[in-house]
Image (cartoon, rainbow, N blue to C red; front, top):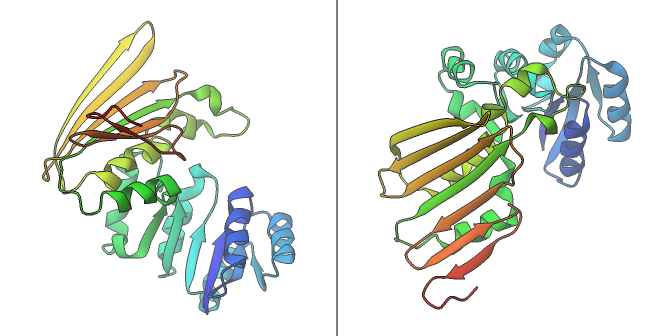
Length: 259
C-alpha cells in the first residue's frame, strides 16, 4: 500500500482525504499544516497516524510516506513545492504551480526531472464530458478547430478570501483550466501563436490563435473583468461538440441540422 503525505488542512485537503479513503491501495499516513488545530482535527476525522507542523520534523520522517499531495492556498503553492522537491518524492499539486509563467519556468532550474516528479491536478480533464469526447474522437483523423471562451472577473474573487497576488494573476492562475482544453483536444505540438489584445470602454479582450503541427487549430477568447460564461467548442468537418457548462456536452450535425 502506498503511503501519502497531504499538505494543507482546508477544504481542498479534506476533499482529497474523502476520495483517498475509498481507495484501498492508498493510505494517508501523514498530514502537515501550519495550523495544528486544523491538521489535528482532520487527522482525527480520517484516522491519520502522524501530524506535523514543523518542516524539520517532516524532513526527518520522510520515510513515513511515498508521495505528497499539496493542497494549500494558491499563493503558497510555489514555496511549499520548492520545499517538497527536497524530499525527493512524487508530488501531486493543485493548479497553478506558480502565479505566473516566469516563476513557473524557474522551477526547471531546481529540478531537471520536473516532468517526472510533479503532477498537476487539472480536474477538467476528468469530467465525464471530456472523457466522453476524447473516446469518441480517438480514431478520428479529421482536423479539429478547438474554441475556448474564457472570462475572469475579480468580483468573483473577494479580497477577504483570495490573496491580492492571486487576484492580480487571474489570467494565469485561473484561466489555465480553460487553456488546458487545447492540450486535451489539439494534437501535435504548437507551431505558432498569434495574440491580439484590445481594450474597449475600459474592458480588456484577448484573443489568441494557436496552430499545431497536426493541422489542428486552437482559438482562444477571453473577456477580462467582465461577466460571461466558460464555454468550449470542438469542430470537425461536419459536426460541432459543445461544452456549456463544461460538465455537459452537446452535439450538432452541420449536414443534417440535427442535435
